[in-house]
Length: 280
Image 1: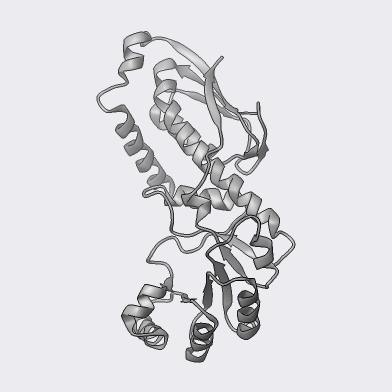
Image 2: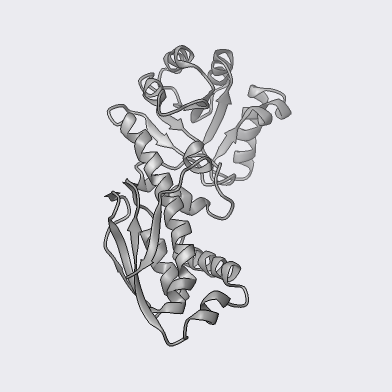
C-alpha cells in the first residue's frame, strides 16, 4: 500500500468511526486537556503495524508526539511497550481504537506466519498467503505476512494468472484453459505468470504435457501424493502445496520438496495479538 493509499484508507476509517463526533470524549473531557499513553503488549508474538500506527496518530492530529520504541518484525512479550503518544486527550482517544485494530490484527498475522516459517526454515519451501483477506485491508495483511517472514502470493486478480478448478471446468478442461490463457496474454501483450491447480496426479501429468505454465498448485494432495507429484514435475515448473495444511504437518509438506506452501488461515482465520493503549 503506497503512502497515499494508506493515508486515504486511514482517513476513511477514522470517518467511519468518528461520524459527527466522539461524543464520549466531547461530553466528559475538556477540549484543552492533554495527556499521554503507551501501547502495551499483552502476549508474546511478532509485532507489526507500527508504521501504520504512526500514520493514524498523524492523521488524527498532526500535533501528537509519537515515539516508536520497537520495530515491525520484533519479537515481543507481555509488558513490552511498543510506542508512546502525547498531546490532546481528544485526539489520542479518537485514534486509539483504529491503532489497536490495525496493530492487533497485523501482529496476529505476523505471529502466525512466523510460526509456520520457523517450521520450514531448514527447507527450500516458502510460506505464502492467499486472497482470503479482509476487504480493504489486503495490502496491510499481506504486509504483515512479510513481516512474519512469509512471502506474498498474487495481490489480486490482475497480477497473476491462476487457473483453478472452476476456471478449468468452465473452459472445457486443462489443455483448453491453458491454450486460451496463452492466446489471451499474447493478444493483450501481458506478461503474467501462469499457475494451474491440479486436483490429482493425472491432472499434474496433463498440465506438464500441455506446457507453458510457471507453477503447479497441488490442491489437497496428501504427503505421498505430493512426493509423487514433485518427482513427476522434476523442476520443470514451480510447485505449490495448498489445502489441509496445518502447523502439525507443514514441515512434512516442505520436506516433499515443494517450492511454496500457501496457507489461507494466515489472514482469514487469525487470532489478534492482545495489546492495549493506556494512559499513564
